[in-house]
Length: 243
Image 1 (spheres, helix red, strand yellow):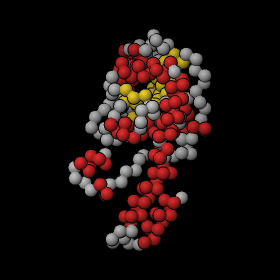
Image 2 (image 1 turned 30 degrees about the horizontal axis):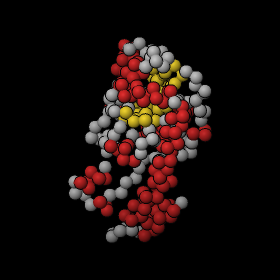
Image 3 (image 1 turned 135 degrees about the vertical axis):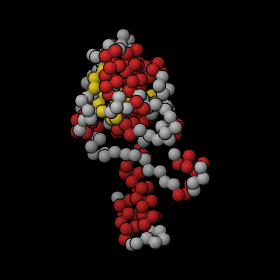
């Protein structure tokens, strides 16, 4: 997004990027049980807002295409939104009542995080558009934090920050490509382990302890600038950035 603003004439030195992050104590994977030894089972999770632009219908269709190949494949959808009823109808029409499960609305975070931790992989199937090519989806960071392998739509924003080997990317809205991604992760537990390790490594500088330093440094510069009411505010921001 910074590059896009600069292309349109904004001074680069006036734009600072602070990435979204999460409460590391709450998202500590050590607090939650890992998936059982899966055998033939493989559980996918989608969480958050259940709207068209998040592509859950694509995930459901991919699950349908794999029903015979992976009998233990399951999809659990945690969230609420304008598309939930339509997605439940799609699930019924495809005969996936025993494969796809929906929560009754949003879950408290205390219930959601253990549910994500119990899954084998997370899917972020956003529909690619101009907005998604500029932004990250927070769901991606939730899954990284909980050490889940991520299957995600390929967008410019994701590729700009995460190298190959962090996620299993697929072409947005391509059911066959998503099904292939699911197939690969199901068949290769070692691949899942490698994806988690690489995503954790690459995302290390994106963690809040690092991002907050940049954020507070911006605040310190602003309050110390011309017309600043009190130098004490800048000093407080600088001290906070050092912690």
